[in-house]
Length: 247
Image (cartoon, rainbow, N blue to C red; front, side, top):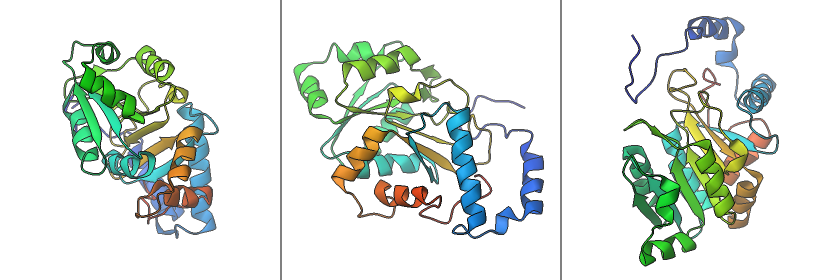
């Protein structure tokens, strides 16, 4: 049975055989600091760049879930404030969680409104918040109401605000939509939606400009600080004991 529930989607049918293959190969028992895991990690990064049209100079790190990325982004990429545009529950949750860590401004719209056009109608207090924010946060596929931001609109955000980082939640669309990765700086998703895998793994895709921002801010205070995570990814390892099966 196929449903449109926003939770985990139907698992990709070949996963049953992949599970058997993984067990037989012994990969489930390899040390995540070993050469065998590093080879798997390198191949996975390469295939993600190829299959998802991720530019070669964008970094990829493995995380536990897309929701975890809300925390990583707020801690490691925002110095002063972020500005969240949303028209549904998941975008609102991202805004509310970020606001617990760093100042965050939020602006909600109804499902029939263009988020970009909404920015052109901001009252003075909201317009000031937008100017002060270093990052725009968007939800590509709002699973609470079935709306989606178009590629044209994402491109327009980038062209209109070239000085701001653009972060996009693609939890329910990565792997199922042709995304303009080069037109934003941070993309993140979990694997249990369009990628058709069991839950327990997420991806954070980061532009060179966002990497430079994280390096400038120098956040290394937390276990999930991006700089710490990237240092491990450059060694084809992870900062935590990873979901090797999902990878």
